[in-house]
Length: 225
Ligand SMILES: *Cc1c(COP(=O)(O)O)cnc(C)c1O
Figure 1 (cartoon, rainbow, N blue to C red):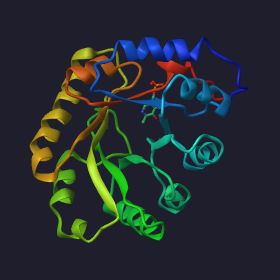
Figure 2: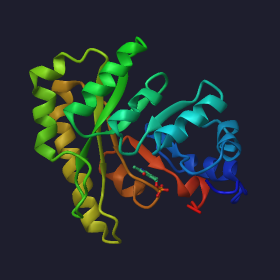
Figure 3: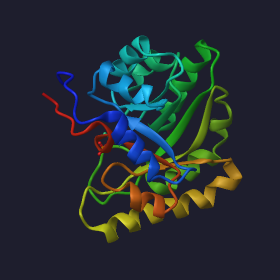
């Protein structure tokens, strides 16, 4: 957590950022590491969707903040922590296994909820432990096992491009995910393609993203002190 000092004017940053966005793009304001006081600046400026990457930090903020906030879990999910977010989470972006889906389904059921999920697909060149291989997502969506999970709903796909200055490479990675999304969306009623962060959201939108996850361009740089 940082010390809560203001970094620029968040409501101005947010307004300017939203002005530059096409209307049909959903903005997830990534508030990880920022204290509630800072996040409330964005809330007061009208933002309602916030993204966090640590479940317990998100839960603490959910307790404190107004209840019309929609909380998105954008980070890697450990199965033993699903229970902390099950009562309230709006969308889980980084689901990468059937085992995790099963756990989310089990906890959602306890709260008589349906939890919306995205499958995280590996598109970056760099070695990452997280995300499914691109063809595995199709297998999962087509599996009979998936039909047994009544308390989750797969809304779409999420991906992260390689962290590089090479726009051609980023474009190729986003383009590949968009093509894959298009090949699945009609049959499986997918409506969400989550790709793009502060550094690459323009390219992501150009390649068909409809949900972007943006932190530093709104809240300023994070310090992980
Ligand atoms: C932190 C994070 C973001 C936002 O990153 P910024 O560069 O600050 O916009 C987006 N997606 C994921 C998965 C993240 O962990």
